[in-house]
Length: 88
Image 1 (tube, rainbow, N blue to C red):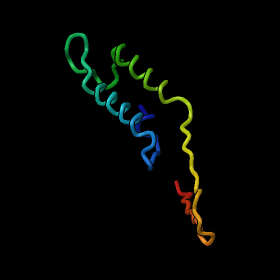
Image 2 (cartoon, rainbow, N blue to C red; image 1 turned 135 degrees about the vertical axis):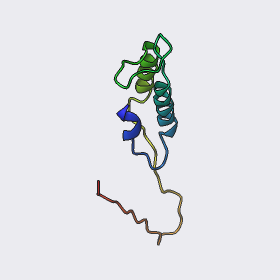
Image 3 (cartoon, one colour; image 1 turned 30 degrees about the vertical axis):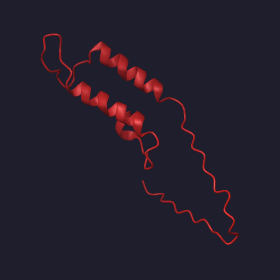
């Protein structure tokens, strides 16, 4: 479940995928045992939930590509300034 909170996505490009993971996490908190009791914190998740989490992880594999371009700007005096922060 670290994958859900580990994502750094300030532009929200993978927000739909992260939201599904958060919903799965919320569902795991409310999961019940076969006897109808809530799961203990160290209990194994029910198999259907494990399978849903596996499908969610597979859907998030790969890389996200976002095209960035500054084109069609007729002003030759235009300057683009980019600031970065290297702090952790």
